[in-house]
Structures are given as structure tokens and as C-alpha cells.
Image (tube, rainbow, N blue to C red):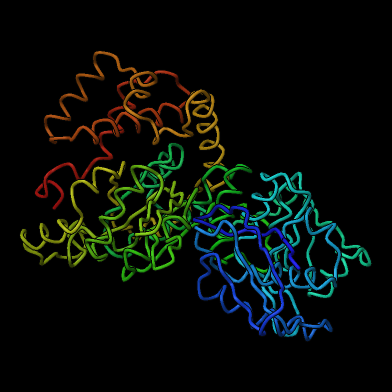
Amino acid sequence: MLAKVLSGSVIGIDAYPVEVEVDISLGLPTFTTVGLPETAVKESKERVKAAIKNSGYKFPDDRITVNLAPAHIKKEGTGFDLPMALGILRATGAIPESKLAAYFFHGELSLDGRVKPVCGSLSMALAAKEAGYHGIVVPYGNRKEASVVEGIEVYGVQNLTQAAEFIKGNTELPKERNDISRLFTKMDNTYGDYSEVNGQEHVKRALEIAAAGGHNVLMIGPPGAGKTMLARRLPSILPPLTFQEAIETTKIYSVVGLLKGDQALIVQRPFRAPHHTISDAGLIGGGTAPRPGEVSLAHNGVLFLDEFPEYRKHVLEVLRQPLEDRCVTISRAASSVTYPASIMLVAAMNPCPCGYATDLRHECHCTHQQVERYRSKISGPLLDRIDLHVEVPAVSYRDLSSTPPTEDSAVIKRRVTAARRLQADRFQNVSIYCNSQMSSRVIRTHCKLDAGSRAMLEHAAEKFGLSARAYFRIIKIARTIADLAGQNNIDAHHLSEAIQYRMLDRSTQELS
């Protein structure tokens, strides 16, 4: 007898429907899975067989063939266990066909019949909705994340028997519902507050500009100047995630399996800080079966690279495409996968190998050649893609011991959010969301300079030997500074402030 159960598989972070066809025919007892299954899918037969028997159902002693269609796409993961088991129960007549045709099924089976959580349930729910199906049945542990998709019924099952009884109509499962607005009100500030940082007011100003325009930042300063402390508090001043951004980010974490417990939605901008020993595959993604890397896990948030020159050079160079295109494409012989990677890169480094070139309280013993060699670990093309270069001086004892009133993150965040609203209105007819994403054509439309500003920028370009990319990035920064001031036009003082944030475009002698 032939049975069909609807399920899905994930490519990248998006799911597509898969039809699980189960045929039971006379012959020697065998269990064959076809349709390009990878190892975990092939091993499903042992889990399915034990789960059916231990749930009190009879496992057929016949020839079982399971086809996963479309057969030309490789299937991965353990989520096919539940639909395979239900297909076998349907083919043996243990359950009716009625509800099988209306629902997606997705879940891993343990040997005793329990349905265990799997990765990618949010993507599966979105795929089921797009395909026009009535609902989706997922593991009980995945019900929260799947239920953020509106317009589709979501049911969580704890074991195979419960799923079978639901299909028979003997058990009513509660529909899982989520109050999306309530999820966003439950946010906790886990990143600290800028009111805790004494001194470094000009660095806070630079980070405020970066947050307002989505710009990349490089901080250069001696050890203990507060670079890491400042970077880790940056998410506290970023504008709130929109629902669409939260869905995009949650899909990535769902596919990788990093959602915590019953977490339904990621409502805070992510902050990722990988160690400098990370590989290029760990940073941008990869592997035999490609998985998202740290760049994609930081999507819509901050990627912080501390001790920037200590990363291997080839690892840093792979950042070029994500910083430019805001996505990562991983190509393999059989397929190509694209992951989103719209990030704010925040990097920190010392000014020299010993770290004290700009610290007046410590003597630097590095030679000119050592400083050049140290800074050359970061290539010019990569530096060009970093908008703001900010010097972070050592903090004086007076700043550390005093407790002057400083702005907290909430105050700065309000200014940043207001600037982002201006940008959203400005770019409503263009598929970009902040100033850092402007193309040269958009810059010419929205960033007109007067004669004095053009002359100032021309002088800076000649003096510092700015590349075309650095030239346009200065204009983008100036546009953000004007937005923070609530001004439509870019004035000369906006541009002069933007130019000072390109310190690494100057010579090493000026910085030492």
C-alpha cells in the first residue's frame, strides 16, 4: 500500500516542501530510503522501527520503500523520522489519511517513541504557510518558534502515539499561539550601559554615529583603554529589531539549533565575539554540509573582532564579500548556499605590537618597521570597508576616579532611533534601510554637498590619498551626522567631523 506524508527540508536558512512517500509491498523484510538521503536520514529506519514497536504498533515484516521527493535535492537532518513513521502507520492502515494531507509533519523520534526537538522548525512553518497548507505538527520543544508564523495552525506533539491519535481524531491538541507584541516587551538589556563607562566621550560619539548609520568601526588604542567595554555596550544603543528582522535572525539560529529552551523569537540584536583563532569556515560559514558562520549569526547585529591583527590574514580577507554584499555565498560542487550577513563590524586593535605607541604613560619599544608590519596584517581593501577609524586613548586616573553625570544608553538610543526613522523615510522607495547601505547613485541623490564642502573633501582626498570607496564612506558618515542633528543638508562641520574618523588613511608617522 502507498502512503504520502508532507514534510520539509532546509537549504541555507529556507525550507522547501518534501513529500515522504512510503510503499509497503510483499517481499523480504527490508527498509530502503531513496531520494538523496544523507547519513542521518538513512539512519532514520532504525529509530522509526524501534519507535513504532515501542509505541504499541505493529511494524510490518514486508518490503518498505521510502522516497523523499523531489529526489534530485539532497536531504539532511533527523526531521524526517516522524513523517516516515506516520507514513508507515498509514500504509498499514493504523491511521486514516484525512489529516495527513492537510498538515506538515516534522520531528525526530527517540527509540521509545518520544518526539525530540529538531533544527529549522521556524523555516518549516514559513514553508508550510507559503505552500498553502492548513497547519504544521512539530516537536513540543519547537512549538514556540513555529507559532510566531501567523496564518497557520501549529501543534506540538510529545510522542508518536499522540501524533497518531491526533490524526485519528481521538485527541485534540491545543493550537500554539504567541503574542508577538508581548515578546518584544520582555527584552532584557544584557549588554550593559554606556553610563558605566567613564571618559572616552569622543569614542562614544563615534559609536553613536556608527549605530545611527549602520557603519563599521575600528577602534585603535592601548591595552586597558576600554575598547572591549565600549564595543560590548554597542547593542544597547542600536534601534529595536523590527518583526521582519527578528524573523530573519531567528531563522538562522533555528537552523543552527541555538535557540534556548522555549525561546520563540530573538528580539534583541545579536552580539557575536569569536576568538581570533577562528577558521575562515567558522567565521563566514562552510563545511561539507554548509552551515552559517559567525558573520551570519551576527545578522542584524554586531560582529566584534577583538585583537584584529591577530586573526589570520586569510580569515580576515573572507570578510570582504559579506561587508560589501551583506550576504555570504558558499559554493560546493553540487550546490551553492547563500546566508544573510547584514552586520555592523566592530574591530579593536593596539596601535603597535607592544600596544603602547599612543600611550603617554608607557614607553613604546617598537621600531617603525615592526609597527608597519603589525598594521600591514590588515589589508587596504579591508580597511577601506571600515567606515570609522577611531583612536581610543588611555583613560586618565582623573576620569576613572571621578563620577561625572554621563548619558545612559537609553538617551543615546533615542537619538539613534530618531536618525534611523529619518533614513527609513528617505529610503522608503529603495531597498536599503540605513546610510551605510547607500550606493553611489543614492549618495548623489541624497547627499548633495555645497561648494565649500566639496572643496574640503577634495583637499582631504588629495592629502590622505583616499580611495573612491573611502571618499564615498566619508560622505555616508557625514549624512549620518546630519541625521543625528536632524538636518536635511550636509554642512561643512558635518563633513569635517566625518573626515577625522578616517585616521588610518594617514601615514604611520602621524599615528606613532
